[in-house]
Length: 475
Image 1 (tube, rainbow, N blue to C red):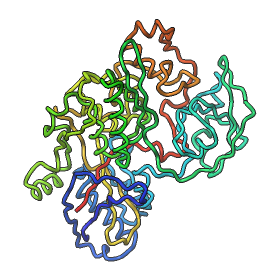
Image 2: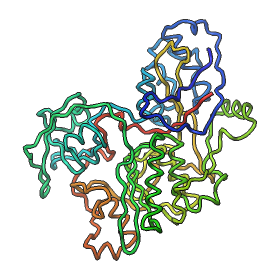
Image 3: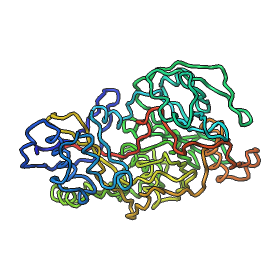
Image 4: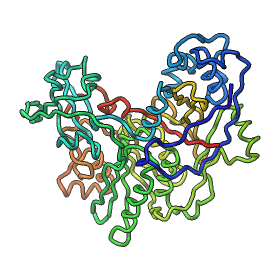
């Protein structure tokens, strides 16, 4: 098989971004199989098999090529190679279009632009309402006036139910009806919107603010995807935090409850912006990557060093510097690169988790395509595992990270992000100063007010719910 080439080029000019500093020599995969010279499904599957055999984290668990169903369609064949698919490997994926795959990785999707939680409307647990968790900046949903805290009651004239709630938003143009929620009862408002999905570049910086609280300046950031085209925007937020009223913030609340991951290089940047006393850590290990045995041997031979395995702290002028702790808000939607930030910081400062268990994904990927362009698909198999500076990586199970303070995001209607009465942020403020919390009549009320259909926040497109972390490679 001819040499495989990893794609790393962003497809649209407006998402052009700073290149990652990681560079990997890509070894050559080869085969004596005559079918490799054709464009049949079998030839494509040989290509897929050899790519996986060379780079898949669990390559030693793959079946032999001869025992695989080589005549399957490539999209079906790929999933037959995965180790414990949906149990151990819950993460590898493939797209029939490498263009679509790359767009997804870079936050370019055709969406309404909402993330929501699904709640039963009553005790019969038949009908469902969508409580909007957030609206993407610049989206069709934002243009229509939808906002966090709104309730979607009907779609295209149909009642949302337990049987259709996962598919009812799939049409390109949708008619949406809203409801109010008063004393546990949902009532139609009479307001409706006709909204057409648009192709949108996600802006991951959903909200940042500073709240004065019991003599402390508390910074709040809601960050929903690690996109390196927004790295400079992230630095700008931290510069504002650092310079706030000349002395900077005293506490940081990082809201990752909707962040399913993204670029590792951006996750590493966020770590460096938060960690205490960064200058003393520059050049020391932040995290490490673990590849399969064969690929590890190849990389060591190519580099004759550990440069492909270690990520060291780098200087960042926007580093906050003085924080002893950070509060991180989590949910089942907190995954991959978000969990990596938590794991990165744990050896160096107190990390207080508020919310629900995270997703549990300590492995990542890079993209594989055919450099000869015989096939248009893109592969995104798991190719590495991460460990922190203490070689710890014990969150890679369905339990994920366990929160220090369990909070469920089921108190409705949802309050605005950064509002002291908002469920998650309010809990963080109650820990920072319980006295101030009571003095402001914000007594903590953990009693659920609604029953969730699914405790994982959902996007109007399943693409918005992808959980991953990835690195770019170049020759």
